[in-house]
Image (cartoon, rainbow, N blue to C red):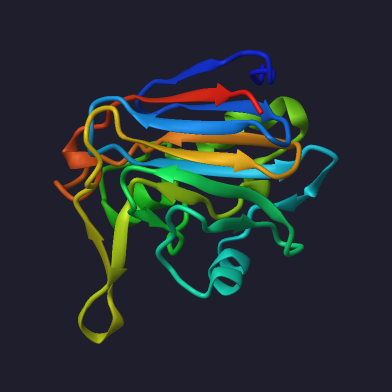
Length: 203
């Protein structure tokens, strides 16, 4: 069951996801508990799940691929869903999708494992949201970019224990966060998946 707006502290254990409601004016504080752990944050309008966070609209409307304090997260309808109010890390990804079964089996070649896409879908299933409805996320604390010949690059996460980013809701939202499940290589979550925590701060 999703967390209600009245519940203030939401633990996100490693390799899991939790869903929660947030009202306009409240702030979602996402905290890296141990450091170097990224999280996949997604959101939907609480009144119409066909409106959801959009990486592409966010890139275009901010005209950048690196977001920090003052920047806004946009929906697929070009409405502002969240504003970044405080950011201790200043590195977040809006290029890559969630990890999933395909990534583990065909890219990392470690066999069949569930990833953030499956974990987010599980956390949201009571709302009728399925695996196919999980959109590209705002990947908090994840440092990415491009390298030689335009190749995608993932760098070791820069967040330290206790670092956080504050997202102030500009509309009532159903949101979910996964503590990323990738532990292949030092670049992804420092090679060890750890916990995140969400705190819902009042308006």
